[in-house]
Amino acid sequence: MSLAAFVTDADLNILDEEGYEAIIHHKKEQLDQMGEWCTRHHGESGLSQACLDSTTTAEMAAEGLLQYIKKFAPERRTALIAGNSIHADRGFLVLQPYKPIIDHLHYRIFDVSSIKEAARRWAPKETLKKIPRKQMLHEARADILESIEEAKFYREAFFLKKD
Image 1 (cartoon, rainbow, N blue to C red):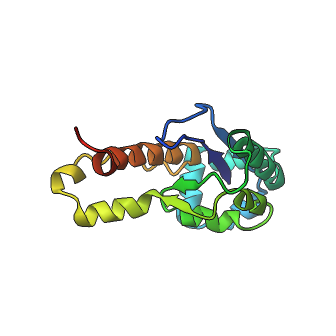
Image 2 (cartoon, rainbow, N blue to C red; image 1 turned 120 degrees about the vertical axis):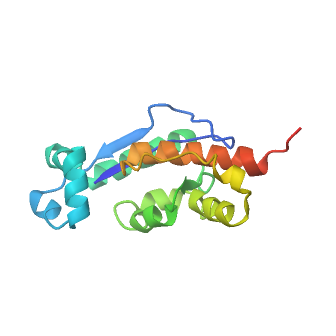
């Protein structure tokens, strides 16, 4: 329904605050096939109506995202796809028209959820209490920004040397 991306450096600093976002056109018949949760949530958030109103095709969104990524990472296999449960997003992106995006990115992924699960099992309770809380908006742009903040927390908590 929507596609968004932000590019960061290795220290998780966002390189372009605007990022990339596209709302992909869907016909009413397609939206009517959504499950109850999706129908309610995306209806209340306005995403369903935005998809009906959009003139952006999946092909246009895919090409726009690829060009956005290439602006920051022109060389193939250098940029990682990252986020929470990013394998689920990758599952969509391996299909057309998105496959050229995956082909441009590195084969490795940075899954913030994997770090979260390790932290839940092995981190001190005091550290767990400090994990940033999510708003659970389930909107592409907001979810990505929350994933970046969460990754920054884990980086600081577990991977940087304390002086």
